[in-house]
Image (cartoon, rainbow, N blue to C red; front, top):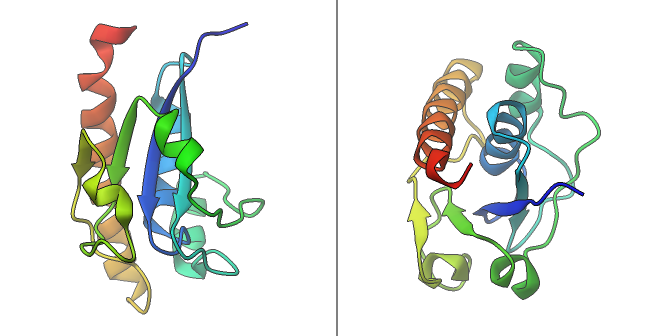
Length: 137
């Protein structure tokens, strides 16, 4: 069995940013690592523009569903990435030890061009994260 190390991407709704981050991480990271995304108040469905911009680069999110963040997910993660929520009530992971905060805008109610820019920033951050994890390969 492959030894995996969990990387957890969190935001409030788990409908856009962290779903994109999880997908990029799964595509580009070494198989030793396992990406998970979750939210404190999950939406009923993914943001349609987030799904669309990922399809433009041949990453399919159609089968993904928002998931509820659990204490178990946090405790069993090597790294927790906060995508940009800023208050303790909606995003308690912000106050978890060793959480990285990427401060990425929520794609909700943004134009397709704005979502593409968010997508590009997420990809850059994920690639930087993967590079920083090379010592664990």
